[in-house]
Amino acid sequence: MGINFTHWPYYWLNSKNLTGSDNWAVFFGADLRDISEVNRKFFIEKTNQCLEYIRKNCAGYRLIYRPHPDETSESQLLDLTSFFVQKNDQIAEIFLWENKEKIKYVFSVCSTSSVAGFNMGFNAYSFYRYIKELFKGAIRIYNDSYLGDLPDDFFIENLAAPLLENKRKLREDHQFLESFKSILVENSGPVYFTVVENRLILAIIGLAQMIRRIVPERKINLIVSNHSRWSERFLQQLQKEFDEVIVCPRHFYSLQPKKLWAAFLTSRKIKNHPLAAGSVLVGFAHHDFVENCFMSYNRKNFKIAFLPEVVWSLNFRPESVGFDPKNFTTSKAGFFYNHFFEPLLRLNRTVFKHHGKTIDKRFYFIKLQKQIEEVYDQVFLIKNSPTE
Image (cartoon, rainbow, N blue to C red; front, top):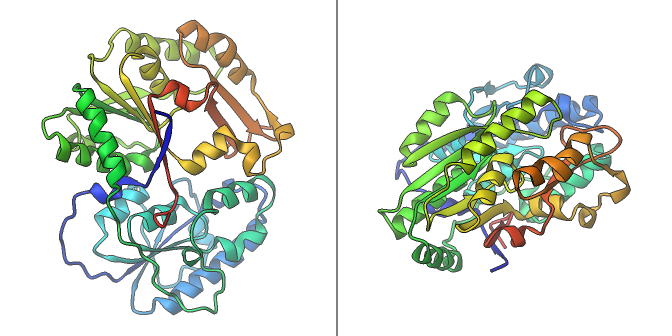
């Protein structure tokens, strides 16, 4: 069936129908210590100017600063006068949705939180164009690619300009809905979502609610490739959204015998418990080891991949967005997985590359060795903007 395009499935989330105060202006912070190739002093200076713009244009609103999950002492470096620092383990997407009746404006320098807010129908903005001259090298290419297809009114480029509303009304993607109906008619078994990034969970909940409108009796399960950002409390909360939540340990490329053995045991556990015929596998992390195991060991089941179009471009064709192929290298562990470990386990082979001479924790690229549409029966690329 090849590759198709859709939008973030927030339209199908159940509305609380609450009447809120609609007087919050929220700024999502950045992990300053891990931003590569950026002069941090000037980044902080520019960010403070952005915060002053919010104070000026959102007078009378409750100003909230939400730290990045990996922040340490960044909030102490910024001028957060009048801002209430609100730090907890709640992911940005869930925070936005649960407080949608209270929030009027969403801001960040270049966080995916602003993109999520825009796609949820908020007045959401990025200061990236105002500050982007500070970014150099790989991070400039990355940000230009990730934010490149968003409309002009998403960006605040001139701090002297007034703050204008830019929210979009969420619309049902009827073509996508009909396509998914056909899949469910032809495959009558349970639906299994697989995920590794917790920021994607709200999109999965939206799809789960869409499926329940189509076939209320269908079992819908969630498979989580677990890591530190999945709190135990949040995993327990997800129990009410799914018939079953299956938590697997996350595995990454490594040559350590202990980690290889752990990955082997996970693969055996998944292989020895095949899914029922007619099950539908919906993957949100094509490169993840746990998802790869489920897709590889259940080849006769219908397999769907969801990933943002920009993530697909960055991982499957990074040269097309400006990365120099000469600067990509493969780690020894990535080579071992691709040539030995994955073939031994009869998994789809994956390719891991990082940008530069040393591994940059932000700029690594992972893709299936085959084209993604050769591994999955249906691929949906999610547009980064609700306006397209």
